[in-house]
Length: 176
Image (cartoon, rainbow, N blue to C red; front, side, top):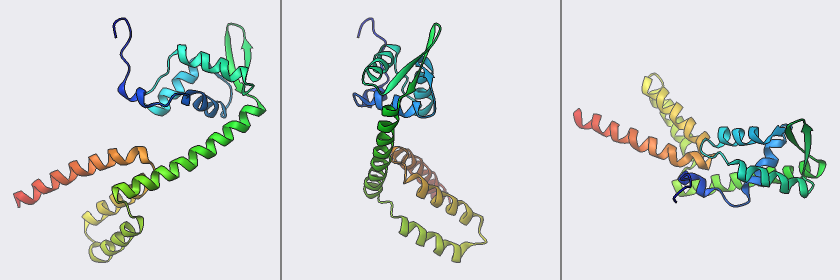
């Protein structure tokens, strides 16, 4: 890759065509300059900042299809949703919500997250150890796991953290 900046490995996971959908979702909050779109994508994803060479052609395509209109402000231009763009962005938002729910369920099954089981565990812990300060921590951790299980992109990170904590706790048991 001589002469080209090497790309972050995570950016290679972004599906082709995703940028246009993401732009439509961002513009739901109001008109934005192209550069601000790039910044917002980086801010929200934490890993992906598309280049001007991909954002501006995507915006031009969305303008051509009638989903976005260009607002001239002298040298700088803002982009805003049209009625047609708002309608399709609502469809994208609904699709995103459905996919997130399905992925959460699938990942929960893969990772073995059974919400009812965790809630039963919490009730049992409350009965036995309510006065114990460790109960408070376990309760907080279990509640966080329930929340995280609804976000598939966070489940694998949570699993890594829990595995590290498990290793440290095992070391404590060996010391006893």
